[in-house]
Image (cartoon, rainbow, N blue to C red; front, top):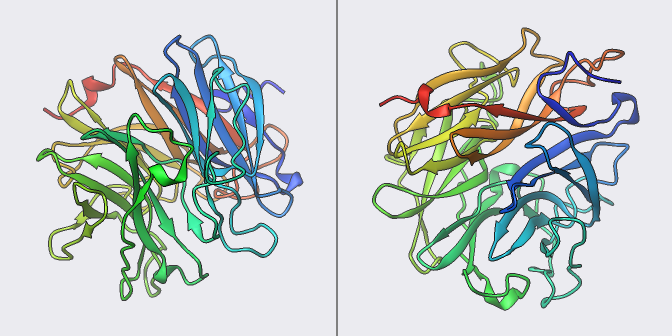
Length: 365
């Protein structure tokens, strides 16, 4: 199949009939210009423990699978200190009746072809207990430390899930558990908004914050999502978290679905690619570029991808990186494959690559 009708470059396709669905898109660009991307499979037909890594030598036009990782899911790729890393958990909530996994990290010294194995506290197994939830989320270096957000989710009732932040000295061996500091866990019981898939980012005052999706779990007239996000401030030592409900629950287009936020030093604006849920009402069938000068006031800048059908089409869980004047991104895409539709908008059948050229022309001044 050529999939010429599917937007972007197709990295991976899986038929809906397999009951395996594409999740966890992530992307990184290596110093030599190679693009690397990863994804998982979830669903009744999947192992719910595995990730798959791809490489492109032509800036995302064509892709080749270079690795399969077992016991690695909900993970992001990032390059740090001359090596490629992938960080997430060893299984998700559909594996063997266990709820969410252990924190794991792996390192590759050859661009993603071969990887370390997280078998103990010295080789990338960062927790002994199950119960951690995450997604492909940003990693940030700030004040000499490397930072990443996760959630502790040991029970099915998502209202009781707790947000946290991990950090390690930027020159430490990231595979060694004792090098990581885990913050206190912040509860938000009483809120109908499940806080998940946080983005660590440095605000204009130089304070590290965790900007979280608020996945509304209420009933009534709610569609299941709202355009709101939550800000949690992180102490300099990485141990304490602060949230002011009067100030830190913000309006953000797409804040109710998974998003990735990164700071552009040239424009001095924070950018995100989001599934805006309101104005107009949508599911995940529209993808927008939004930006902010301060993480609190957001402008909708540009519609990147759109499909009229919200039930079997989506461009979601987008991860992205800057590439000079462009934004390059990968999408968990649900789309008709030329023979059959996706199972539904959530259960995607494609991993696709896209490029937004000269993105700063769309940003508010």
